Each structure stands twice: as C-alpha cells, then as structure tokens.
Image (cartoon, rainbow, N blue to C red; front, side):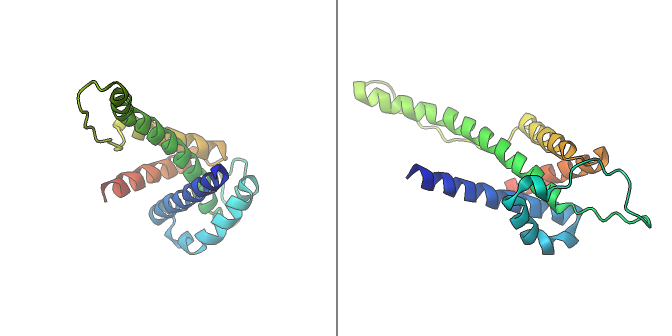
Length: 165
C-alpha cells in the first residue's frame, strides 16, 4: 500500500516536471517541444547521463549552438517540483493544524468550531526561493549564468501564469 502511494507520487512528480519543462520550453526553445517526450524518457531513465555536464560557454563550430535546453529544463523542473512539494507539504501541515486541534478537542468535547481554508498561493519570498532553486540547479548542471538565469526566469513566468489559471 505504501509502495503504491510512493509510485503514484513519483508519477505525479514526473508529470509535473514534464509539464513545467514544457512550459519553460514554450518560452525559451519552442522547437524542442517536439522532442520533449523522448528527452523526458531519457532523463527519467538516467537523470545524470541525460544532462550534459560541464560548462559550455561557446557554441560548437561555425557559430552554431547545438545544446538542447530540454534536458536542463527537465533537471531544473525536477528540482523546482521537489522544492514546491516541500513548500506545499509545509503549507498543508500548517493548514491542517486547526483541523487536527478541532479533532483532538472533540475527544474532550471542548473548544470552538474552527473553519480555515488552506491557501497554497506562493508568496514573493517563495517565488524568489523557486527562482534561486532553479538557478542553482541550472548552474550546477554547467549552464552559463546567462542561460541559467533565462531558464530560472522562464520557470517563474510559467509558474506565475499557470498559478492564475
């Protein structure tokens, strides 16, 4: 039973990572959307091997930059989904506290009725942490600072737009 929930959670995290990567690619490299499913399969099969490591500040011959953004978007997306999972878990724990207290009070038949609705909107500080998480992971993967910042900004833009829908 616990194993089934873990597999389900992994599948949800994977789907969210791919969705975030797609939103990022739509902003920074839309032509890669066609290969995202294949890149995602490679990434989830072996995340370390799927992402080119090392700094790549200069294009490959003839002034062409053949580096795909998709593997980086998936790796950064996975880090951001993991971070957001922690944020949501903390928010859910805090939001559940009044309900838990209410249930405990029922055992003793005391205390007022509590009605709270959890708010899962990210604060400005949390958006800043998401951006920092994305930027850190992109640089950790060897992306040049300028591309890492573009990717981090695309993550934030994607989350801000998706969060309003």
